Amino acid sequence: MIVVAALAIGVLTVLVVGSWLVKRFRGPSSDRRESLESHREAQEREPPVAIGDERTVGVEEFTEHHSGERQAVTKVEGFVVFVEDVPSDIDVADVIEIKILSFNRGHTSATGTYLGRA
Image (cartoon, rainbow, N blue to C red; front, side, top):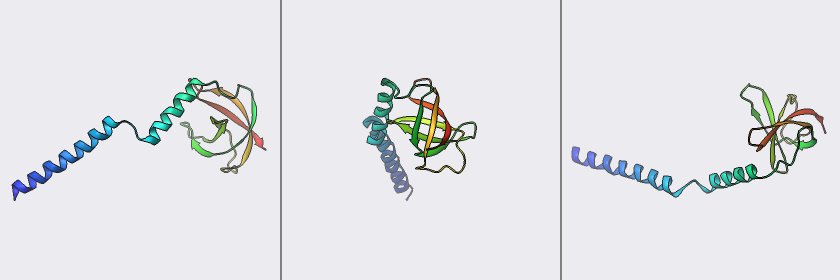
């Protein structure tokens, strides 16, 4: 009885470790691979906005800044812009006016401020 239990635990361990090794050496999943490729492309291209630009954008989602502030996530030609000072009555899919304030270190995203509804 003990031998059978030990054998079952051994087989289970081999299966778990084996599946982990296969995943590890096959590389990232296709979704993760696409995300990494998009990130590399974003690092290589020039941003489609400049500091001081005012744009009309749609709110795609909301995120919480590390300061605890709610920010709108918007895109300009696929380029991500996090928008600060968004009123609480703004919802996903609302169209707003923003002004670009700064870029992140790698220029792969920007920060903007809310100017008003479009």
